[in-house]
Image (cartoon, rainbow, N blue to C red; front, side, top):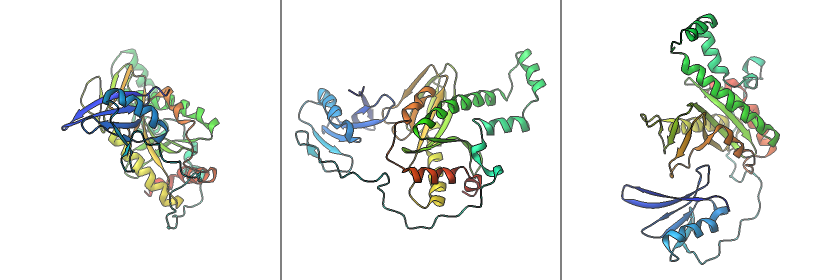
Length: 306
């Protein structure tokens, strides 16, 4: 068993049941009215159908996301022949060349939280002033920066553990329009843009585009993560010359509880210790492609020209 859960969802006149993995990934969903089950991850087809039948009865029909509807009694189609890791048709375009990599432009030199630390050093309070503020127990406009720095460092340590499984990680990847991508993970399972949010002892809910911390005002965490992934994909494909699969990830640090909307499957949502779930992913990039993508991604000028 895969610890799948069935979650009801009603909105805009629709009445659905979603089957999710523990990390929030949707593997199947069903329309209560039509009793049509849509399979999103074929691996979990039989288990998901069995769970949904408990809610819908035996008279259901099953279809894959891009296939014709078929009766639940039908056997699933035979799996396609095994292919190489990159099954997408090649894109006929010449990759944009980059200048020779220098130490100054090598993002592999960045440590977790490097950009935040540079900002604090350039514009923030001196060490003496910070100690004095803390001694007086006064709040500072820079407190949130230090909290964010600690969050990036903690997630960075967790990501570094994935190197044993063939993954490479970069920190503080700049964006042409300002800001940075906290972490970029590259490996056999593709590329992941990782956005770190540190909310100590908070209760967090993440929806399709927005999130709420302690039931406060919605903040566009999920939407921002999706935008980062789109940006990263455009940059990497421009310089690699082949399709690069990029997924957004939101990692929450120090939270007391973390809830995901049942419809949230476009962004991976984790707590810091759960990023290890990415380690066994594979089949998206070959070893040669991983090295090529990493070579492009570590070059600062690739991102600033984006």
